Image (cartoon, rainbow, N blue to C red):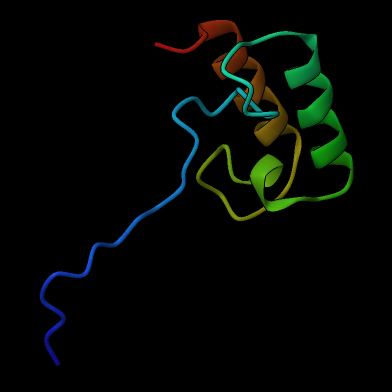
Length: 70
C-alpha cells in the first residue's frame, strides 16, 4: 500500500536531559527526571540500553545532564 504525500512526524526531545521540555537545563529538569525515575516512567528508564529501570539509568541521566545540550 502506498501513501504518497503523507508526512510522518516524530515528536522527540532534541535534548534528552531537558526533562520538562522548556529548552533550558536547570534544577527542574533534574527533579522532573527524579520523579519519573521513582515512578518508573519510560522516559526515565530508557537512558541506558538495558531494559531494566535501575541506577544505571540514573547515572546515564546525570552524565547527559552534566554534558548539557548542543
